[in-house]
Image 1 (cartoon, helix red, strand yellow):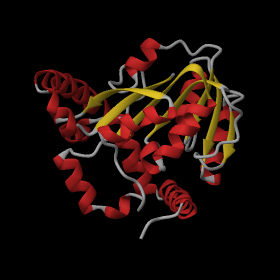
Image 2: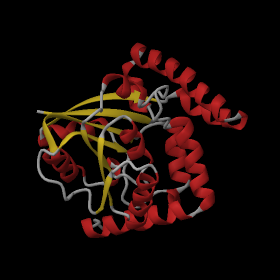
Image 3: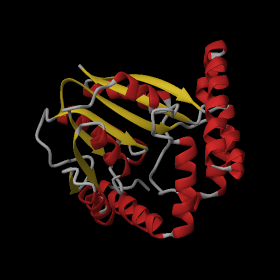
Length: 256
C-alpha cells in the first residue's frame, strides 16, 4: 500500500528522533560518518566541493540539517546559514550547537517538501543523505524554488546497486525508515523536470573495505578510504558501467 506524504513525514521524524537517542546506534553512525562521510578538506566526498566554492558571505540552506554538525561547518566557512529539519528534537540540538559558537545560524522545524523560506533566497543548498528519504519530485521543485537563479545544490546520497551494501540493507531493515529508497541514476536525472541540471560523482566500490581499517583507529580508516577511493576512481574511468555498483554519490544540481 502506498505511503501518504503525512505518513512518510511521521516515519522519518520518529525514526531519526529514536536513532539520535540510542547511544550505541549513534556511536556506530558517528564512526561510519567520520570514516566514510568525512566532511573535512581531505574528505573524498566534500573536499572537492570546498575547493571549488568560496562560501564567505553566501546565504546557504542545510536541507535536512539534523543536529547541526554540517551547518556549523558551513558557518565556519563564512556562510550565513539556515537549516530545516522534520525533527523538533534535532532542530533543538542544532540551535544549541549554533548558540554555543555564537554562529547566528537559524533553524526551523518543518517538512522539507514545503520549507518556510521565500523564493530565490539561497546561493547554495546542501544536504547529506536526505533526498532518498523524500518524494523526489516535490523535493526537487522545492530546492529549485528556494535557489537563486544560477544557484547550486550539493547533495551526498547513497546509491542502489553495491552488492555488499545491498546485502547489509536486506539484513538490517530496522536500521532504515520504511520509505527511504537509495538513489539510482534515473532518479538523479529526473531533477531536470524541476529545472535542476545534475552532475554526479560516484564513490566507494572497493572502498567499503575501509570499514575494517576502523579497528586500527579513525585516522587509519580515513587514510584507507582515500587510498581505496583513488583505486575506485581509476576503475570507474576504465569501466564506467561500474559506477552503477558504487555506494555513494555527490550530486551537484545547477539551477537553470
